[in-house]
Image 1 (tube, rainbow, N blue to C red):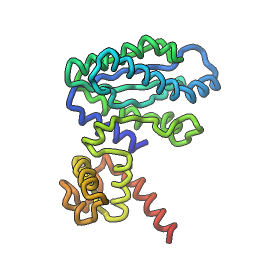
Image 2: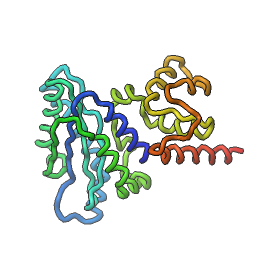
Image 3: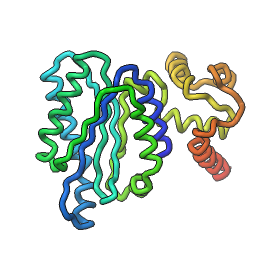
Image 4: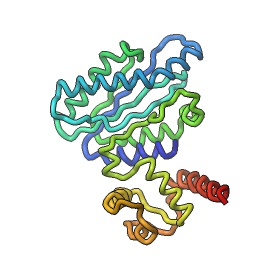
Length: 248
């Protein structure tokens, strides 16, 4: 969960255009605990189907524009119902129009797909959307419990960040895991700003970088990880050390 928060924050912060956040909520009414559980378990399928249809409608109305949906994350409300935040990025008028058509379809068809009547759409700007989402995720103990426990209610990809962003930043879940293992095995830290170079070099070489090559990356050092990354790295480092000791 900590890695997901960091991936969302770093990648959305890399957006060069303006961003927009929209939210679709679960159905209202007096629902039993079982009803809430059943709806949450099926919400992922409903959400995927609704996203697919909204994307098709946006492409139909604004042809020639690639998807402007750059991220989405779930939220578990106090009443126990899931809802979803979607983040769009646009740098041109046509890209804005694509995102607006997408949101228009969501608003018009959310209820038909089993979601609630409340649909919230913010305004375009350069606000810290990624920071807001990651801050929420890091404090959401209920969602963290659902994520860690699973219980068959969360799919493998419960959080989404556009490949277009991760290709630019190099900040992926795999890369975040590697930073922890790298610190555990080699006592090397590589700052986020160098992850893009890291991934590009590995693609070019067709192999992982060795210790000497890693230390040549901008900002790489043998010092400990920075404070905000320390919890993530510490967890992965502990797992790696445990695995090594078990193997012995």
